[in-house]
Image (cartoon, rainbow, N blue to C red; front, side, top):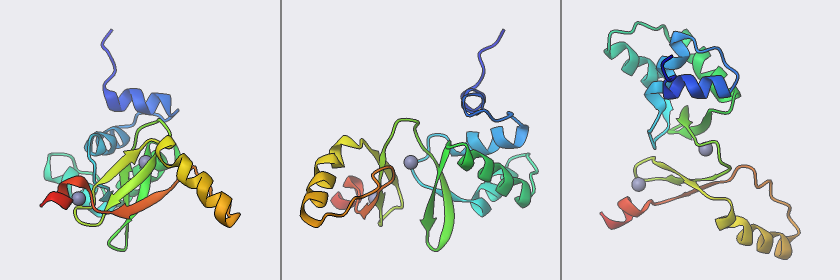
Length: 140
Ligand SMILES: [Zn+2]
Ligand SMILES: [Zn+2]
């Protein structure tokens, strides 16, 4: 018995049937820090020998995002997808290079408590996107 590949494992855990399209799309997104649009996924997949239609790419991205394997972002006015870890996290989004960093929730928990204390506002802490400049961009 062979060990299932990382995309296969993740699809399995998420309860998705590992179709060739879902595997290809997920494999392309694994390990990328920048979100990528459906058009870009389509272009990259078709640069190799895979011929997958844009509609199929959209469908695969939607099912992966619905299953929680991908998070969606707004990238220059377009919807973009990023493979995120399963551990709860907030997003730190760089305006310079579009990289998204996963931030442990406890780093912002104190700030959110203070925010609530001072404003009475109850933030939904399950997803927080902070825009700014990443460490790499800040030093160049
Ligand atoms: Zn995420
Ligand atoms: Zn950056």
